[in-house]
Amino acid sequence: MAWLVMALGGCAVPRADPVLRTSPVWLADDAIYFLRQSGSDPIELWARDPEGAARERYVASHEDLPDPCGGMDELFRLPDGRLGVALDCDSTRLLAFDPAARTFDRLGDLRSRVAQVTLSGDLSRGYSAGVSDRCWSLSTIGLPQGELAPTLPELTCAAGASARSPVLTRWGGLVFAATRDRERTEGTDTRRWSVHLAGFAGVPFKGIGPTFQGLPDLDLSPDEHQAAVTATRFGRSRLLLVDLKDGESRELLSSEKGLAEPTFAPDGRHLAYSDLRNIKVVSVPG
Image (tube, rainbow, N blue to C red; front, top):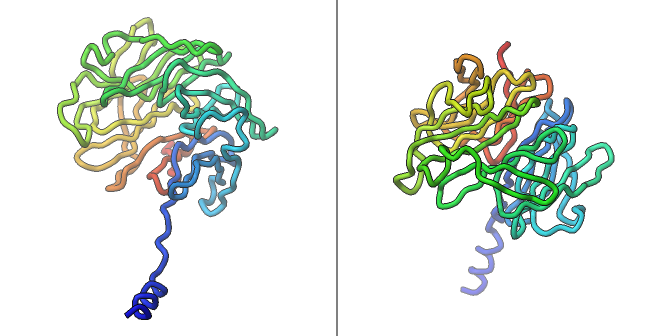
């Protein structure tokens, strides 16, 4: 019996840990950066060639970070051409990665944990999105001290609303996703979200385009004329383009798998996104 147990155990095929690929940022024509994690291993920074998913390359790990306080949690695009890296510490630490020099610079520590970040051209201010009890809210950021202050009081948790996925324009406008619906149930988010603009044409904020469900992720096209949004409509995960002038929308694709974290190519002709397991690329219609 002991021999039989050993034989059966020896024939078992080892179960491979899943490899997750998240938080893509299309930083340069030849490089999409993303976070990669295999099983319970530490999260690493990787890059891939937009032309081929098989051409992935390791970039950096926790040991390469200056004074690391926690693991890499989110990537975001910096206006100066570098890659922003948020670390999950007791608060959130912001770093800048220079792909040419392969070096990290510390931008500052925020006063609390946040999930999403966008910064201005001089890297001294910006916006963040944080979540508490399933409610998302926006805050202004002041660097390097890391001050956080609530913004847009009508779209705060206290007002029964949620706002997330902020992206600053070059001239200081803000594009984000928001909902005025209260969260009623656990599980899948069923609130009605839409793209919002703040600071456009002197208007404090306004919603445009269609409504959708699910927690939306958003990126702004290089010409700042349209937003790419991943969201849920009619039970399927979808990648949408929303025109910021008239709110007209186009659907690029839909899937039963979850689509998240869209990121525009520098030329605006393609989009990358994550389905958690892989980083994929789709063309943007002209």
